[in-house]
Image 1 (cartoon, rainbow, N blue to C red):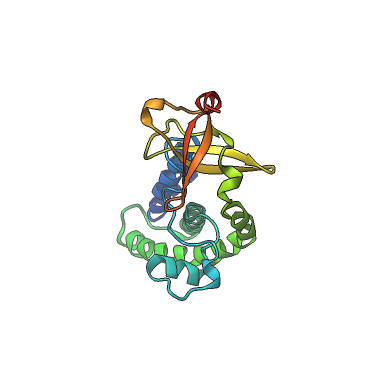
Image 2 (cartoon, rainbow, N blue to C red):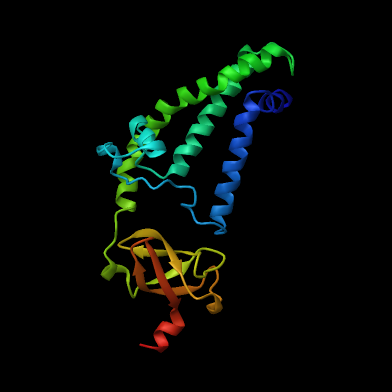
Length: 216
């Protein structure tokens, strides 16, 4: 255990350890419903890997590297986790220099981009079998199928700018971005009804289920 602790805080593994801690915190906060799951996602279509033309910047690079087709947060998690493993075992097996030495920083700094470069094709291979699943999960659902349907709030609050809920559709559980008036005081676990869809940001306006039932 002492050797493990020493290695994860040894440069350059500590670089990936910090990133891994941040990502773990993100997943924990997202699971609690404090932030929306796609808060870090890039605006890349799930079919983008079929058509690279017209894509630039990070989106174009990710398509070229085969890192699209699943949420960006999953790609980032795998990249950091693989980079951490590579760095950890290289440090454990081959770093014989003491902490803070010139060779540690020289070789360690060179190892970071190498670990990332090795992680990219491995991540691309790992996410390949997941792409059909996410393509189906993220396929647009016709408004008429969801509007008027009850769903359960999974976020800690719902207002004009924030909110998530889960809805069951033919055995599948969908996570939807929802919005509502803040004075409704909708909270986690409440049942709401989808009454309007805003396609520009793919959000749904909701009202409490008891309010919807009383008006219909």
